Length: 219
Image (cartoon, rainbow, N blue to C red; front, side, top):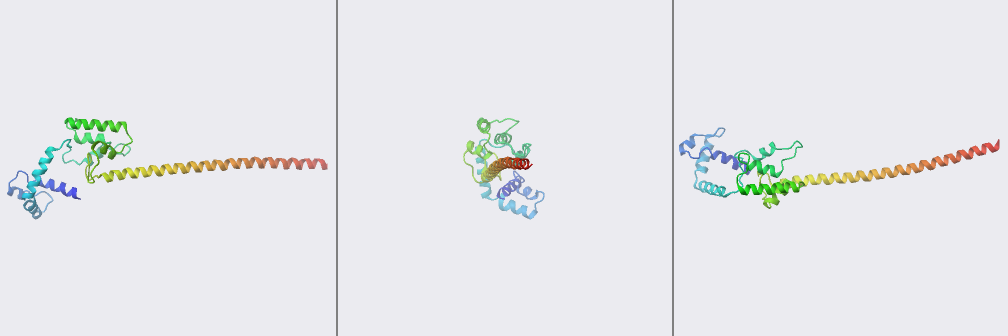
């Protein structure tokens, strides 16, 4: 919810950048009540606190390395576009490249180095999950953000998905072991039945022969 609010607020702020005060008040965004817009402009966007925070954020963004280049397009949307035919999400290397490329290539040396490291890890240890690859390459992730996945996707969610997968695999393994045990039990019972049938046939044959012998001697 906080992320949605921040995104909406950022989108609204674009409407007043580099505009005189009167123009900013007049240009009410579509779908926004005029009185609410006036309050947002006067009591939020034009306050000294907001201006100071905005300047600080701009400076911090300028210092960032390996920034994504998706613009306003959510990273989740990009991930959805690259979902495989099996329904599985793209691997970390694909996500990293597609969200940081410029003209279909990575431009910063540091970004290229990190991409090469991610590719090598994904290829050499294909069983690793996305969150495991990220933490190998970028270190432990914060609760509210995972490198390469954008806002709204937490480390807990990714690890939880992996835990669910592990639980299903464990359950499948237990079921396979149980089926194997039942199969062995059935095979054992079938073997015992074969022995009993053989003994019954032998006994029946002996009784029949004895009866035939007695009948012959009486004649």
